[in-house]
Amino acid sequence: MKKFILPLLLLLAVGMLVAVESAPSEVVGYVKYPCVAGLNFVALPMDAGYTMASEFADAHLGVMTSMSYWDATTQSWVSADDFGYWEGDFPVYPGMPLMVYSSAADVYSIGDMPATNASYNLLANLNTIMIPLNRSDLLMAGDAGTEIGTISTLSSWDSASQSWVSADDFGYWEGDFPISIGMPLMVFSSGPTTWPVRSQNTGLSNRKSK
Image (spheres, rainbow, N blue to C red):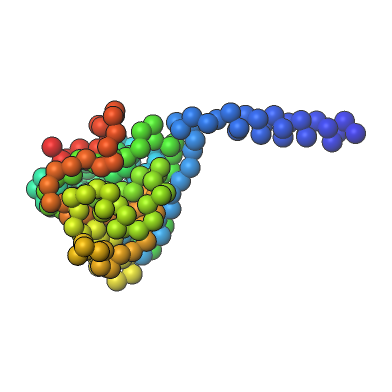
């Protein structure tokens, strides 16, 4: 009988340890981005401790040959390319969208829940955002566009067709499409704004937007 009771007690003890880990920084998880051979739009929703794009690439050895982020100030992509080393390596942060050129291998963001959910300082013109992990209430692109208020177009990258799919504001959202947490988007803003608004740790915002 004791042989059965001891394993049961151990299982209960482990269950209690898991149950008390409720703080966001103690929750480890992942977000999966299915990829095709070609360009894929992904993000870094989890806090894996990465400081540079090359660290993200190193976690997916042999998968990516190029990584780019959108610079809203210059309205252009800034890239790092694999030449045996990462030429043009750049800083990354939780919540950052990335366009990656990869093989047909899935890409993962694995790590802790971020201490503060993603927020973005948008400029007039094109910007990239990610649907924050605490915004499962946003079901359609138009929901996000309406809430932000300055957005006239939201676009997701269709890896299969290697093209953008857009929803446009004509008083209604023409071409509206489903969205989910962790999903990166390209958006057109009529002017500067911050979304979602938060009271602290704005350092995780779109750092190139000043």
